[in-house]
Length: 410
Image 1 (cartoon, helix red, strand yellow):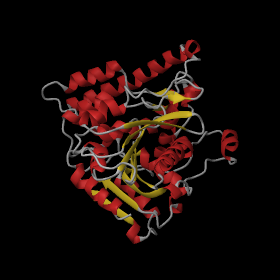
Image 2 (cartoon, one colour):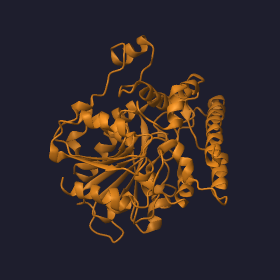
Image 3 (cartoon, one colour):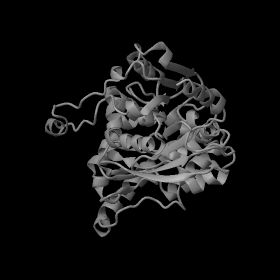
């Protein structure tokens, strides 16, 4: 086994154990914190100040409250670095994936990061941050210390987060929006579209390494965790928050990554597949901000999909619980063939992606086989893996420029 692979395995054990210990402590200390309701971060310590304005761009902090009470942070880059007239630009919403937040779109230098590239190309850019991430921990009545705060899976992102976010941007701009999703950000969009939701506010969607079908995933870590019911074990222990981030772990990673002869881009490989085009320095920037927490229930839901190869709502296993939530003994499926054939879609996937495996993407494309030929653009990058789509040095010319050309036709 290579040194990098050994380090990866050791760190994963630390991440899982650290997450469990931290959550157990949080559960025991909940009584003392039960009245401490999290609020949205102030504008002086948010993503705008730390990641956008430092590069010379205007940025606005916004919050939106979902129907089930979660307070989500959003950032708006209304004009490009060279200025311009705000208010009449086509809006674009950027939605990150699992264990990430909106900083996903800001990790690279301004001339390479999708958020800045879109802004400089005349778009009104909005950056989403899903519930539970650093800047979206607010709730009208619950604290993140409360296990009930974490009682959700990506079903709730479909039912509550996306509609609230879309409606807010639509109300602010008066325009239909383009959507860009990465990883889980695609899954929730496809699920919503399959239920005929959001279409009245949406111009088009760009799907970067789509997560939909997951039964043929080749990521050894994700596959083994699912096959061995790791997320379920954590959930059954009563650990409602899955938080892989801790100061000790991040500092350890950074120390390892700074050692001569250690290329930390290899550490991502066990998760994502062999990324082709990451600068080794990007991992340090990544570790400054990511990974982010999610609900353990959400990790269980994804594990169910990996084992079953289906796109269904969360399975409570118990028929009585499923009946209570869905009115049927088994969870309903999201039917990808229900996505309207005339809805404009740009889909890009990579041949080295271990999370969004080529064979799973082909299943999704099979579901879209009746899509209007001029409304579906498919790009295949043989050398790209999962992280390349948001961190590759050449993503602008290889993926983002074609994506923008697609948007301009809609």
